[in-house]
Image 1 (cartoon, one colour):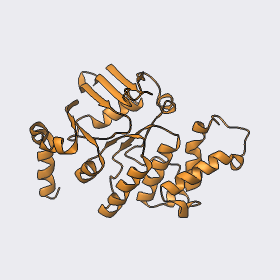
Image 2 (cartoon, rainbow, N blue to C red):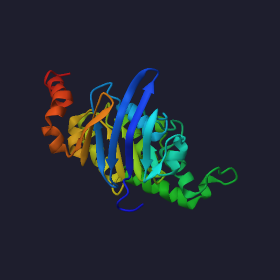
Image 3 (cartoon, rainbow, N blue to C red):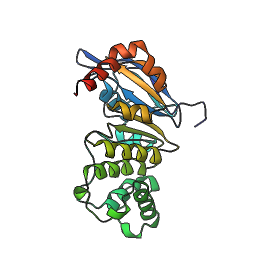
Length: 258
């Protein structure tokens, strides 16, 4: 991938369900290594946008390009193998496997094992070493042999991020990664995201404005299925159209205690 090639690009992306158009010509160019937050009011189309990028939905029209390659119509697992990985709003882990086993499962394909039917996992030194490395990165080494179902909520979210980056993806999508966390958990989690996504391109959907303005290099504001602004946090905060469409309402809600 050359320096001039965007890590991710959306070109006039549209998605309709029946006669209802949810994404209405979204355009976005994300450069390698950028951290981008996608914000917008409920129903703006943020989750639909993530589903289009990750292959869960197929666009009605328009294109999604990953490192310059058109990925429209590809299955989620095919897109993952091209270097894009995603976490979900609902934690998506293997509850009856240990922390270490979860992470090892996440690295097997990227290390070339694919459908490993006749190998003992304990003998896969590179997979075991990578899993150990990931465990240290997400600060769960003390929970190595704990079943994922017995972790705290924040620990489960950290484990999911470990699995998400374990496959070696260079573009990472995180869907509301701090939802349901306390302020102290959120603060620690932002630092974790920063640590584990160094050198990667990050897109995150997030409602917590503290997280958004503290983490993102640039912010994409989605309203009624369109990207109405894409700029630095300060520029987005000062944008009158954004204030009218979203940030003013968000600030009013927070002031009212909602």
